Structures are given as structure tokens and as C-alpha cells.
Length: 291
Image (cartoon, rainbow, N blue to C red):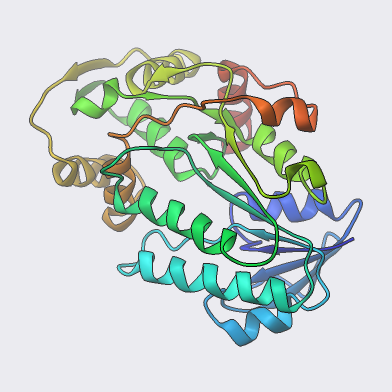
């Protein structure tokens, strides 16, 4: 099959495009491709928000992966909306049989702007004529994942952490290798058409537990003290001081941490035949890649 990965230079996009190229003709779409040809991937320079560019890039493509998000830009909601609209139209015009979208877990009446934008992207894609497979993932544990890199930086840099209340919120972290396996497993899989799947790891835990587990694997023993008065804005500034994340990225991420990200069903794992990685092994694998 001819498969396009829109957002192919990202943390998920690059290894996905490389893995898919073993069995498919893969087009990597990005604003700044690394090369014209790399690891069996045909690269196309295009902005996902450009409708005309998406029509050209997705012409003749059978499966389209939409992995674009604009977190970090001041107008990320508008940009994500425009990208979803352009990709949906380009996939339809090009005759695609499936769009695969990797979004995020989170259900609440007061979703953060980041999580609300993720949900809106899914709705725009699903409103088009091409069947969509929506994968709602919890925090991805892997090198390059902004959320995981933030947790790792906190553990490494702070022997004592003054933590806001969101550290008691539950999440279900999932290994990057497992997310990639799911993305590959739904490619052209008609049983996944017009379906939404939750993608969570083996364990549900709080962010505090997650940090403690990462610290233990890292051989560290930080003291975590929870306080009730760190607002999302102060939390994002606190993260900016001690982690690599910029305020533009950290703030929308932190605002989303108040919403539990727990999977409601595990159907996807049986569908793609994947045995999930344990959290501790996911950490070790991420650390090996992190260096």
C-alpha cells in the first residue's frame, strides 16, 4: 500500500515511517524533511495547514497517518484545526481508504485547551468521508516524548519537589514501542475503520507514583511534597525553570494534567495482537535511547 505519515519528522512519526517502509510504500510529509530519500521513505515538504499542498502530497495514498500538532505555538488550536481540515480534504480527494489519528486520552467537561484541541481534531477528521481510526493515548513513555522528558528532568534535577495537586491525578502511561505497534497494526485493518480506541499501558497510577517509579529506576530518591496553591500558570513556570520544556509547551501540558487519562477499554490490544510492555521496562527502554 501507499501510506503517508503527516508529521513524519516527529518523535512518533519518524520511527513509524521507517517501520512502515518495510512493508509499504511510505511518503513522509513534513514542513522540513530531513532528506529526499531516507530509510526507504519518500519525503515531501508540505505544511499540514496548506490545503493545496495536502491534496498534492496525499494524491493516490491509501492510508494517511495524521500525527501533527502545533503545541508550542501561540495559536496552536487554530493551526491544529486548519491542519485537520486540510488533511481530511486531501485524503478524500486522493482516494484514501483510511485516516489514522493519534490523539490523547481525557474526558471532562472542562478539558484544557490542549486536550480540547486534540478532541476537536478527531471530530474534524471523523466528519469527512474517509473512515477514521482514532487512537487516544495516555502519556507516552519514550525518548523524545515531551511529557516523559519533563518527568525525567524533574527527577534528575530536584532532590526535593514542591508539587501541585495534579500529581495525585491518575494516568495510564504507555510504552512508545507499544504505541508504534498499535499504529502499525491498524494500517489498512478494516476492523479498525470508524473506530475509537483507548491506548493505555498495563498500570494505572498517579503522576506522583510515576515520578517515584522513574526515580527508583534512575537510582534516585527525591522527596515529593504536595501543596494546594500552585496554579497551572505557576506550575508551568516552575517546569520551565527546571526542565527543557518551554513555557509555551509546558503550560498547556500542565493544564491538561488535572484531567485523568485512564483507558476505558483494552480492545485495541487484542485487535493488533500486542502484549503490552511493563511500566518499568518502558522506563528502562526510554533511558537506553535517551543516553
